[in-house]
Length: 230
Image 1 (spheres, rainbow, N blue to C red):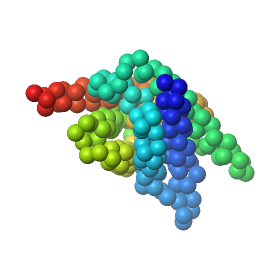
Image 2: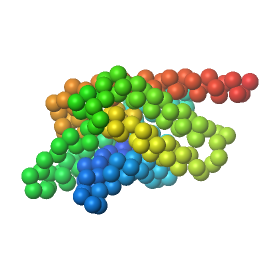
Image 3: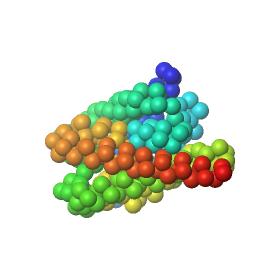
């Protein structure tokens, strides 16, 4: 179990450092900035690279909602859920801590919104709490649906990580304007801890909505799979 938790810690650290790091460090550079499309791709690439690096060790979940959704879907043991979630949150915080150290090494050292997730005044396009809740639930539902399908025993071998990474990229392309895209409570927590204030006040939604979406996806896919067996 220890090696699995270490792998999840490192993988989630990489997801936050690579995804949020691209948003904070590279997205807004004049003339050379990667923009939100680049950020979306960066998040997808973190998952693709880690899928092939640690999937054989821990499954490469990197996300408390994914851990819970896979458990609900019958793909993950209940005794491992809490340890995985703790490793993922700690890994995310460590990644955010590294990013914070880098960002504050510049003149002035202002972190701004630090790629935190938000709604209302803190949504990139001013979307409401209702819009954020629906977006995060639906996007996480689809993410889990993709994961459950791409990792199914009858799915083509060797392509799961690519499908999941591309799925996460598409999710970011859709939802960055709404919430800055969470679909991952560990990613949201890691940034909110450093921003504090409004980010901590709104963090509840970025736990509730992804977990709800993941649970529904787990139940739906489990039902579809059982019917297929019949």
